[in-house]
Image (tube, rainbow, N blue to C red):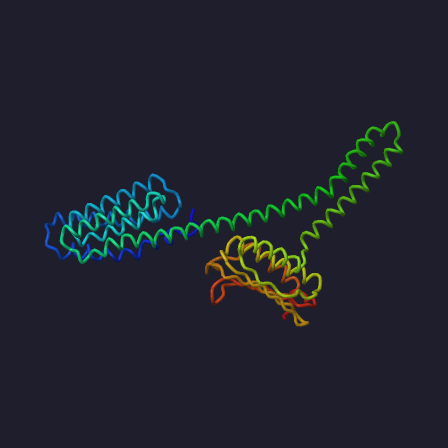
Length: 369
């Protein structure tokens, strides 16, 4: 599926509607019976509506029977109206070429386009309008242009899907890494606890003293396992800013996003370093999931009094009425607890910027800065 909205896909068809000026003008200015005008006008409206629907469906990258059926309606109406009403309506064959270029598989495109151009030329020649033979040429040129556009949109859709897949894989890989760490930490301790508990149960009546000793070992093993898990979780959660920047480079580069990082990471107090690491992580996650950005720039400066981190991208940016997500809300609370300020919003030249300012010396919460 093309990830962009449906109006965007239909937008590729709208510029070509300029050619409908000629049949519309002919319908108004040429003296014909009212019944002919009504039938011709209705046919033109149906032709246009189905033509736009073909574009909308064709950009979903699936050549289903419904798309081919609508294309057949466009082709039949275009040929019928052009043959029936003459040269002013021959331009409808340009629409048939355009719809064929975006809706048909490659092996069927050019036979259909050449056939449309031939019908267009035949109508013009039969009515002695050789001066308008540029219209069959436009049939071919339109097909070339929209076939190239169709290819670019298809490639862009595949790249967007690949970016989302890479982001999902990065999250899955991190989960697997943490699962492996926990397994390595707890596997031995839990096996020891299980064995000693079983042994203590068997010795409870025969040798109570040894059973108590075994249970003491179980308690000690459990406390060690708990301490190891706490250390592991703490290390996992309290990522440093340098580590977060390295992870961001790998994740963004893997998703095909250009990354510019600070040349050096200054030495920062532990809580400030950890908080900025969280800012980098959250910003990277948002870029991968939501922004559609092609480039990200991270800057980090400190002047002895405060550290300033900005993460800017050239993506879509948030909608005006979008509320901050829970991730950014929690991040603002984390930064605020250290006396800092987290701000984010659309940039003037497009994209989004997240900015964190943290004092290097802790400031009590609620104290004005």
